[in-house]
Length: 421
Image (cartoon, rainbow, N blue to C red; front, side):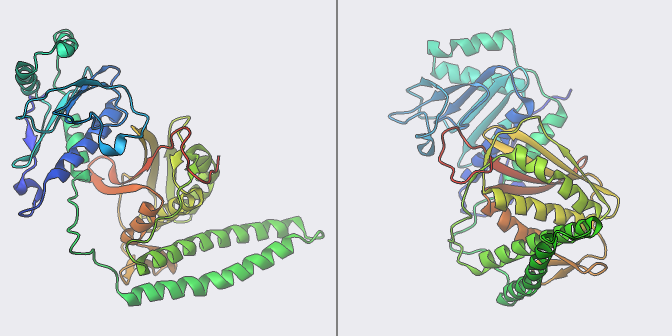
C-alpha cells in the first residue's frame, strides 16, 4: 500500500487552451466517480456534495449542502425518480463545488475551482482535513452520523491500481467541449458520394439474389441439402446487406446537417439481443480467425436504444475488430451495469493491427487480401452515438485496446417507443 497524495488537472497536464471554461473537468470527474462507485460496489457509506446531487442514483446515502434558495437537484433531475436526499441548507459562500464519497471500500474527494480546475484526493489525511474544515463552518447535528461513521470505520488508502484506474477513467471523460464557432471537420463530399454509390451498387444485386433464394426455398420438392446451402447463402447475404445498411446510414448522416435528429429510441432487452446474436457474431469473427467471447451477468436491464439499429451497430463493431485484428486474436465482449447505464466493452488484449489493412478515403478500411470493406472508427462512432450510446476508446496495459459504449437504462414506466422485449 502506498501513501497517496492529491492530484489536480491543470493547463499543463490536460493542455487546457487559454480562456476556456474548465467546468468540463468537473463533469469528467463526476463521470469517473460514477465508474469508480460502480466498480467498487460499496455496501454502505455516504456521498456529500455541494451545491446539488451530482449522481442520480448513488449507491451511498446522499447529503447535499445548499446555498440560498438553491435546490438539491439539478434542473435536469427535477422530473426523475430520485432517491431521498438529506439537505443541509445555509452553505457558506467560500465553498466551491465538491463531492466527498465515504465508504469502507473506497473514499475520494473531488473539488472544483475555476482557477485550479479539478482536484481529487484519495489521501486519508487530506479527506479528514477537508471534513474537519467543513464541520467548523457547519456544526449542524445532521452531519453527526458521518462523524460517528468516520470514528467507527475510518478511511483506508486504496491500492495504487484503483487510483490508476480512476485516473484512466478521468482521462477517458476529459474531452473539452468543442468551440461552437468552429464546426468539426467533415469528410470531403467525394468520399461521401463514393460511399453512397458503393452501398447502392452492392446492395441492389444482393437484394435481388436474396429474393430469388426465398422463392427457391418455397419449392416443396427442394432437396434438403440444397435447402441448407440456400440457407447458408441467405445468411451470408443478410450479413453483407447489414454491413452495407451501415454504410448507407453513415453516408446519410455525414451528408446531412449536424442538427439532424438521431435514430428513434426504443426499449431494447439486452439479454435477448445478446443471446440471439452471439452465435452469429462468433461465426462472423471466426471467418477472420478471431475468437469472440462474452462475459455478462445472468440478467441485464433493458436500455434506451433502437433495437434494430443497436443490433446493426454491434454487428458492425464485431466486423470492424474482426477485420482489423491480426489472426488468432481474441475479442472480448464484456457487458455490465454501471450506475444508471449499462457499460458494453469490446476488449482486445493482444491487440495488433493487420499490416495489410489500407484506408480508402477518410471513411472506409479495405482488406486487399479479401476485398472486404468496413467503416473506419470515426465513421462508426457516428452510428454508435446515433443509437443513444456514449463511446470512448482507450488503451490499457493489461486489457489492450478497449472500446466502451454507455447505454442509458430504461426506467420502469418510461415512454420508450418500440420494444424488442
